[in-house]
Image (cartoon, rainbow, N blue to C red; front, side, top):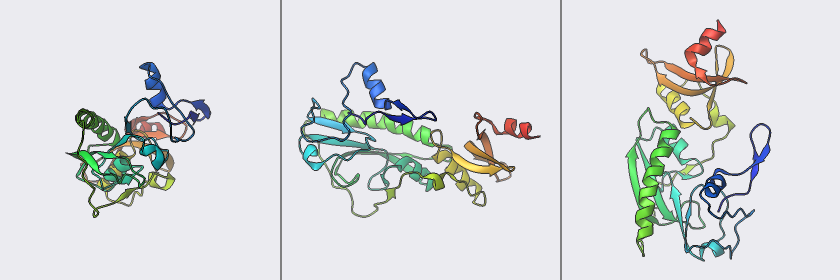
Length: 238
């Protein structure tokens, strides 16, 4: 069950969501309704949801057990961009939560949860990859339990991970170097942080805190160009 095909890329050509591409490669039946409605023939009593992005009505949720995979330690970072927001905030730890899907956003009772540390070297790509490994293991455990136990989420500590917007991509070069590196890593390798360096607009994909404590871009992409090492880009400016 995935979202309908949608325009993608610069040419805005209609393209299938990744879930459909993988499902078809595995020979699985694919459903792509404009919106999920009661009576949808899913062929399963338990449904695993991950980044679906469409509202599931309560009447459909009542027809079976819906488990949501969320890459954060709920109730922290409910919402659309939990991985990015955790890195941006400088969290030292994050994790994966398997919880029952309910009407309220990411608020259902928890069946399983596991944490792991974050470092300054982590970007969104490494966190998503680690989360996927943990999610698979947790899901297998929950699905193997004929009657999993669900624990209500704590009422305190709730934060919301708003969707990343254009303003979130802009680097404020007046901020501390460590904060700027987190900003770059939070948006890499899928979104990209934007900055003006040496009078030129670029997307910064990788960065570090330099030996002198300053912000040091390592990989950039000039407008209309390809990704390249920052030092190669600088040589091209001379």
